[in-house]
Length: 418
Image (cartoon, rainbow, N blue to C red; front, side, top):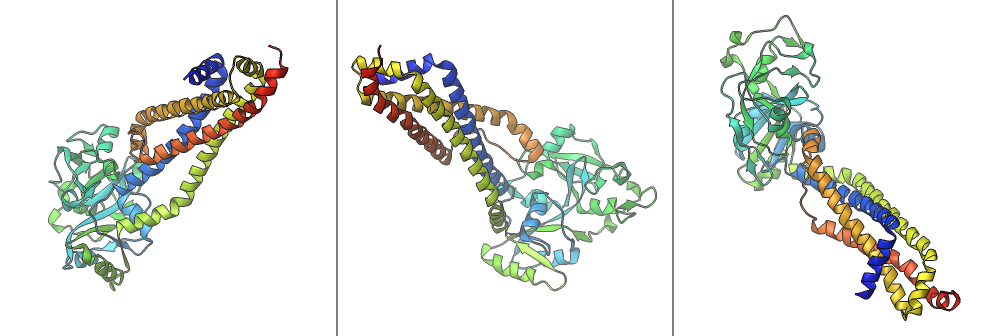
């Protein structure tokens, strides 16, 4: 205990140097744990976006591309699926339910999703959690829309407000379907998934707003809502189809059947396998980020080593006094090691505390801008392991000046005049 008190008093006497060292270690630890937390929570966020869906069917393409545009609203489809193909898949004996998805339009930067009532009935996220309404209800009329929580929050929408959809992803005045505005009839509860940033309309509404459009351009002034007969509308194509099966044992058999479908080239993917492939593609970037973070930690610890070695030359008289008062070389060794451990520990505590505060403050912005749900929860077992490695590294770094002081303490005690 005497050595510990002496180490703390010594650091207190060198406040400026100690604080700078703690700050350096804190920044490096915050970066290391921050990168690890973003990496793991990005995976969790992606994995929680869809749950309980056995197959995703789309036009022939790579499974990662199909997963990204159908679930995460990233990118665009290579082609659409004919409605007849959708009917054939839905009628398969193994299929319990299906959710058609039609993409391609937008509203003020948010993707528009054309779908059916089954979307709100069968879609699951997280641990098979169903979608729920914060306000209102699902579609009733042809030009009703259900918006995600983030759309309502960012654009300030409430029930009964009008929404004008634009053709394509660029919300330009010439591309807007302003002749056929929609009315907000429902606002979904937050999910932390792309659902929060989506505007949902019916498949028949998607067909209705494109009447009179050719090659992405409106021909004439556009048709009015009262001129449209909903009974005459029929979906011609969709972007993707989410499928749930009666038994997962039939997954591979149905996937093979769809992939060999003769009427048009289709691809059926399993979301879990596609996610695994996505993580495989990103593993190099993940490892690169961890390596960079590791080097930052090493740089911080090297800064601490430099500080301890530099101060050691200035403290030779102090060590000689301690030796003259009866301190053994082992006491000098443990004094220097204790100082290094205290600096590392205080840097870790400061870095982790600052990181959790920053995550708590930045989480709403990151969720709204990037759809990534960051948690300010306390450290995970893996993060504790990383902190343990940093602490051990700090101990090892402290041994270098400690060994030097150990070797010099006896000779300095005999040669330096006190």
